Image (spheres, rainbow, N blue to C red):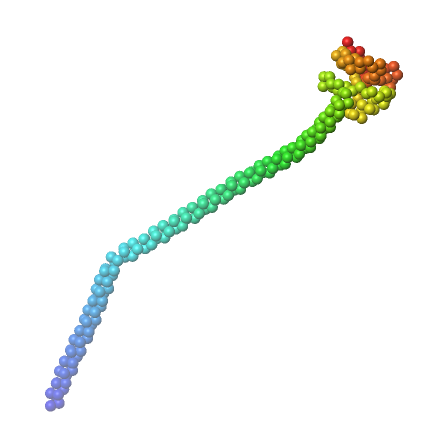
Length: 227
C-alpha cells in the first residue's frame, strides 16, 4: 500500500511539475506576445505619427514666414513714418524760413513807408512854409502895387515920396524884404529913367562905406557901368 501510495504521489508530483512548467511557459509566451504586440503598436503609432511631422513643420514654416512678414511690415511702417516726419520737418522749416523772409520784407517795407511818411511830413511842412511865404509875398505885392510900385522883368520898383537918407532908404526897403536897386544892364537903366521921371534925386544900391572911393553894389559886387 505504501508503495502504491508513494508511486501515486510521485506521479502526482510529476504531473504537478509538468503543469507548472506549462503554465510558466505559457506565461512567458504570453508576456513575449504582449511585448511583441506593444512593440508592434508603438511601431504602428510611430509610423502613423511620422507622416504628421511635415504638417507640423509646414505650420511652423507658415508661422516663421508670418513673423518675418510682420517684421518687414513693421520696418516699412517705421521707414514710412520716419520719411513722413522728415518731409514734415522740411516743410515746416521751409515755411518758417519763408515766413521769416516775408516778415523781414514787411519790416523793411514798413521802415521804408515810415521814412517816406516822415519825408512827406517834412515836404508838407516846407510846402506849407512856402505857401505862407507866397501868401505873404502876394499880400506885399498887392500892397506895393496899391502904393504905386512898377513891374519890370519880374521885379518890382518903388519910389517913395518921402525924403530920406541913403541909410534910411535902405532900411525902409529891407523892412519890406527888398533892397535898393542894382542896375546891371542898359534895359534896366532905361526903365529907371522912365519911372523916376522928373525926380531930381533918388537913391540906388551903390555905396563906398567899406572903402571910401571904392564903389560897390549892395550885394557886394563891384560897380560896373551898363553899356
